[in-house]
Length: 290
Image 1 (cartoon, helix red, strand yellow):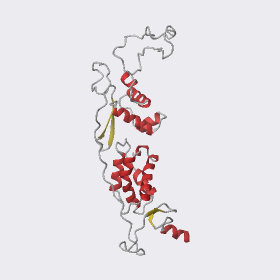
Image 2 (cartoon, rainbow, N blue to C red):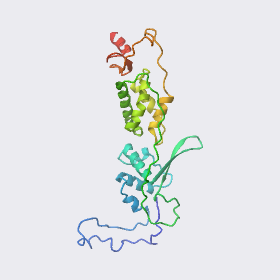
Image 3 (cartoon, rainbow, N blue to C red):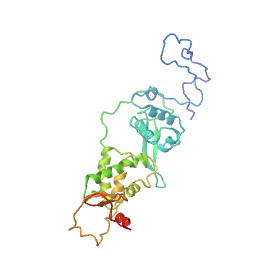
């Protein structure tokens, strides 16, 4: 993108006096950087020192901000596109974008298109706190102070609860949630989020579903845009798509008369089943006997 500097002279100057002869003053101040600058007249972007020397942003966040500000209007800057352009990977790219959003260099909003699709609109701000157009009079860059208080975190939706919650079942559920990020980096959950969602996963496993089946239900057909609250989306799926309890089998004793053993993972198919001790479920024991 060609962004012309309004203070640039009408014709190119090969050197800037006093700064562009590194050998002239090389012995005056030993050590430190020496600038060898040439004035740009085409294909340049003006970047404020408040961004280039930001005391709190990571180097990756600063680099992404510079790259995004240099792009033309309408260019794609979603996580997948940026991860294909840079070697850092989706997880680090997403974290850097959140840094820029926190400090005001990015504004991301979700909007509905005329066709009904939800898309993420990204606005790049070259001076946080200053809303205007390129024709506005340039102002001295100022550091935006960090807010004293952050808005309260929204509570996650409630999730189903298992009829019998054993430590083994909850640990299996927590491990399943922790592994979701291997299927989609956007599903990176905090410890607090995993603890909130684990009973909902346990309620699914209690319904004779394998961990693989639950993982598939939680990671299939996710929205293509950035997930602002992945834990809230998972909580909704765990509640809205909860399968019914398995049908009653005549060979089993009535529930009221049955001894309620803890849930365990089958050594053969990894399916959750109730048993007084670890081992294989009834289906796997039948297959072994045949």
